[in-house]
Image (cartoon, rainbow, N blue to C red):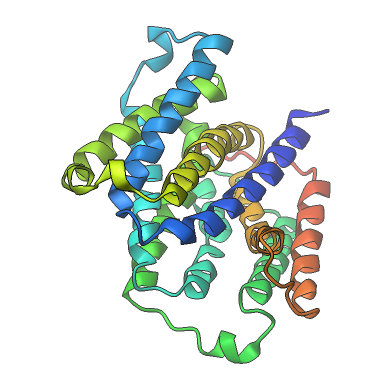
Length: 300
C-alpha cells in the first residue's frame, strides 16, 4: 500500500472522527467556555500524544529544533478551534457548516502560495462536485434554506478560523524537517496548549471544574483523545503525502458522517433527496483517489 493511499485512508478516518465532535460538541457547548474547553482539550491531547511519541519514537531535543515552527502551527490550530466556538455563539450551525465548505478551496490557494502545489483540472472539478454535495447535505436538500443563508458576525469570525485551518495544512509540510508525525504533533499540541493557557487563563480559573456535568467530561474525553490526539496525527501524516487540496477535500464528508452519528444516537434519517448530496461527495473523493497526477513543483 502506497503512502498516498495511506494518506487517503487517514483522512477518511479523520473525517469520521471530526464529525463525532460536532454531535458531542453541540451537547456541551453551553456548559463550558471555548477557551477553557480547548485549553483542557489540548493539554489532555498533548499528554496522550506525548506518551505515544515517547514509547514509539522517543523524544529527543534535536526533534524540537526551531521551536517557532511549533508555536506557529499550534497557534494556528488553537486559533481555529477558539474562533469556531466563538463564531458558533451567534452563527447558526448550518451557516457555519456552509462556511466550512470553503476550507478545501482556501487550502488549495494556500498550497499554491506556500508549496507551489498546482490544482489539476480534475482536482478542481472534484472539489466543485464535493462542495456542491456537502452544501446539499448541509441545507437538507432545501433550496429555500439555501436561499435564506446569511453572513453575520459569527460567520465572519468562523471564516477566519477556516482560513487558519486551511493555511495550517500546507504549512505542516513546509515546516516539517523529517520529524515523525506523532512527534511533530506533540510539539504542536504543547505549543497550542501553552498559548491557550495564557489566552484563556481568566476563563480557566473561573470554570468550576469539579462540578461540571458528566456529559462535559465525556465530550471533553472524546474531543481530546479521538477528535484531537488521533485526528492531529492523521492530518499530519496525510499532509506529508497528499496535496493540501486533496487533504482538505475530506472535510466535504463531514456532514454525511454527522448524519450517521445522529442516526446512531436514535435520531431520524434524513430525507431521500439528501442522499444525492452524499453520493456527490463520494464521487468527488473517488475522483481525487483516482487522480494520480503528482502536483507540479514550480521553483520560486
